[in-house]
Length: 78
Length: 140
Image (cartoon, helix red, strand yellow):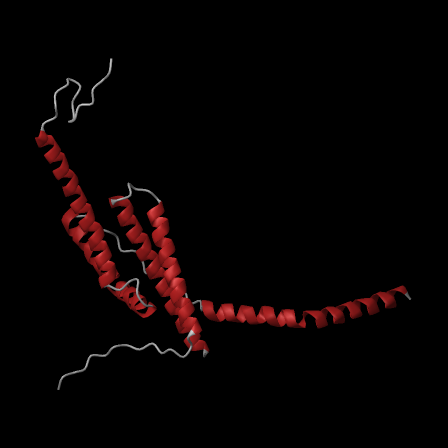
């Protein structure tokens, strides 16, 4: 794995971690306010879930070095 | 004297509560649950629709999209607030652009530390030998 590819993977991992932890935290806030009487545990649970999912994604990304990340490109009708 | 168990809710005066209040309380509780359920369900659907908890590619794309959309939206909102309230927010000077390549400096630091650790035994032997020669020369 080249250094640039490694750097891209780390960037993807960090961005993924930020998004997943933020999403888990946000969902925890929503559920805490609506159903769980403003307790703290839904926030901790959501953040922990997001962190775990991000860690799992990163681990899979680093352990599968030959997996290519592609993008969908729409076909232009002629 | 035994107390009898009587079915039906009674108030302090001993009269049974009317069924209309039960219906109203039930209606209020169900309405509250519907509102909370719709808010929570909407949040979950938004997360599912934007694929925020999906693969890392989608999360990175969502973060990039948010980085492009949020600053102009914040600027427009501040302009709208200024127009409505008549306040003038002073324009702050642009922050200085500092170029500090964290990755390069971290890599250089790691390489420096590792090379120092690798030559440490030979350097220590060399310096101790020089020190010993110096002390021997002084004591003669």
